Length: 477
RNA sequence: CGAGGUGUGGCUCAGUUUGGCUAGAGCGCUACGUUAGGGACGUAGAGGCCGCAGGUUCGAAUCCUGUCACCUCGACCA
Image (cartoon, rainbow, N blue to C red; front, side, top):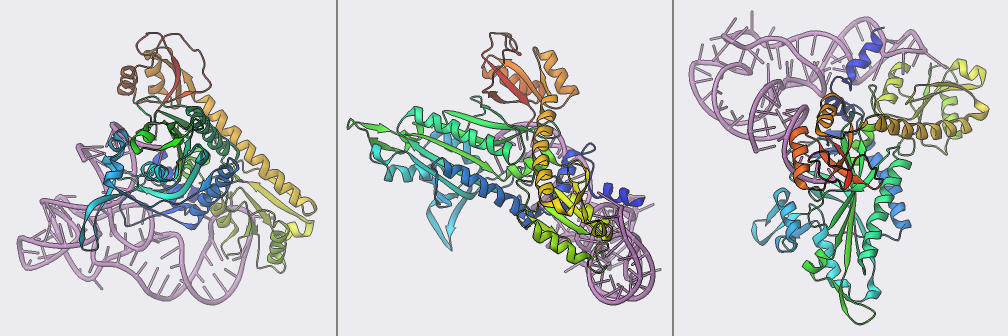
């Protein structure tokens, strides 16, 4: 009986302390280890495998839209960073500077890239001459550095892994189309693969990216009701092109500026997976992203033939990512371990099963047990994984929807913030003063103006002047 | 970066208020044996310059100063 208790002691309950629960899961599932470098984490094999799966599948999505991968330098000379005014102002406070090469002081200091717009622009200004050179659809997978004040594994670290796509187009229309297209790629990926429903929308002027003419975002709700900006796509218009002089000759032999976009997602997505799907026993991974989809756990494995059966089963399931836990831990230990690491299903196989030509399949998310005949185990595993993937998305969606509220005035708004957790839908006049006031009074920020607008009211929730957009508000990570 | 909190074997902590024997416990780890359908048990063992650097003192895990890391809440961001 003390066994169940022990499990509870391992991970802090998420209802008791969500932040501590998150830290426990991240450590106990062996996703990361803290490093001796301030604000930087060591991504362990299991955590990195999740990122690799994201990379592999998302990279294919990018390439399907014509994107090619490149690699840019990790240093940016100060003069280059300075070229676009808003951009420097946004990033200067959080860049790391390299001032020396060996013992020699550098003529010009260089920062470690916090993002690579300036490098891509410099590059594009050299290689784009004609309308025939357009569009350029480049992406890079790399790490960037931002001198963050406070850090959390996957959610905010000083160095993080991401991808940044940078495109250049002949027209404003094309650039806008690409900006939205990539946002769709992200949202679709997150729903299909990560089982996380996203709200697509536009950021307010205040929240948009430094140097962008417009920023679009995908926002997800975590289990504690807080919002996580999970990916962004920016339309730069021709602002960077003018700052970096990226011009081409069009069909009429006229010089034109290009229109650019950039878009990125990061290892923060791993944090989203943890905080959307995890439970008090640990991580729960959607089957399509799990490095191990099924763990076969032999029962009484010392008994003649049991391990052989387990290995045999593994071979039969070779079309899935399957492992056998043949360590000499007790079965109970292995169950807990499999749950902690969020492995979607486990398959128990013991003497009793072997005798009856069956195995026990247990789903991680619902803990539902299924007695399955060996004759149909491949199809059953496949079915359970598909069902689990679909159910996880639906569960996340209904959690989000049931934690989304409507406010028509500030009393309602403040009441919701005080008594509930989640998103608030409210109308906005688009005046930054109201945005600031709401933040001041409630701590909630504008998450986005969703593409799917609803006419909740015709007056701004804050100032009562005519409303322009419905906005999702919430407390954010 | 502002306010608060915590740093003692791998983990969770006791000991710090009131300085004083060889720094403890549980879990984990290693070996052997017995076990096995929800974190098994026995026996034997290994493992700690008490976050780090200074200082006070005959004597510091304990007092003082500084510093670093982590956690919570703000400000900032993917």
